[in-house]
Image (cartoon, rainbow, N blue to C red):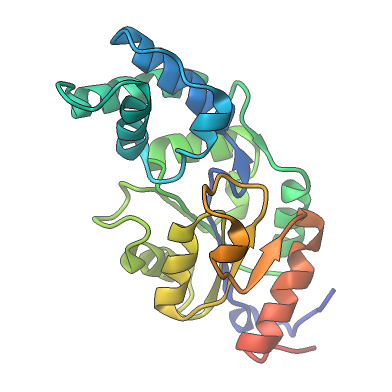
Length: 236
């Protein structure tokens, strides 16, 4: 494990996506979506199919769920989005959990003085509720959701504002995510990225062309050190 000098400003911000990256939230999202669909007499969707619909926000999830269950036409999308979020708020911590090894990795990164942040398209309120419920909120400088700013991923300003809120300049960070949106954001800023192989991407992760592919959180700090040395010339 690389130990840097005491100057914390030497270390880049580590920006995490949430759903499919830090947390396995698909079971609770699927339950909320299916309850919403049931209220308009639509059939339930399988968990496996919903996993690949997650990651672009509540409205996009509603649209995808409607399309998969019979069509979008003649539905009040905003009313369904609000109803979905109401249901989801009641159950969002029933089955959601951190991916194996994520908690230890977060604690170790914090000990090393990396500023940590979350940049997610999930609305800010449920994102913070989940992070608090899982006992890791204190480790993050900022948790920005899809409604925190006027922009959301893959728009680069969502990531830029999150990095700056963490205390770093916009090109001094590493993005960790599970989707093309996450990696496209990092590429637009010219910062290195890590994509997890266990997330919700409907595109094979090796086709997304992140700098590194993470199969296990036990390797995260090692991968971050490699990227720090390569892109920021940070060494022992």
